[in-house]
Length: 125
Image (cartoon, rainbow, N blue to C red; front, side, top):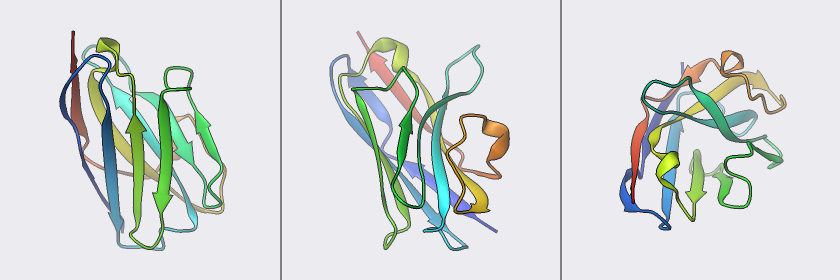
């Protein structure tokens, strides 16, 4: 069983920054790919960024050049640094774990077995 807890969300002005954290527990974290997704009101959940066990990263177009994903296996935590935030970044951000060891990064949320409850990010104009 895996537990994921996100933190770091909040209200920020457009152009500002936030760093989200996702703390994992319950299984070997270091061997799994992790992903960040977001869901805005009335929209489907979308992939934001992912990171493999070997620190290979992948970003959706919405985050390229502005977001940075990283992980600290000793702390079992994955981070999403978000800079130059826009009002359209407003959403609930959730992290997810792919239970397959040494797997690639998937942008399809169906490939991830475990999810956190999410943290709200609101970007004001």
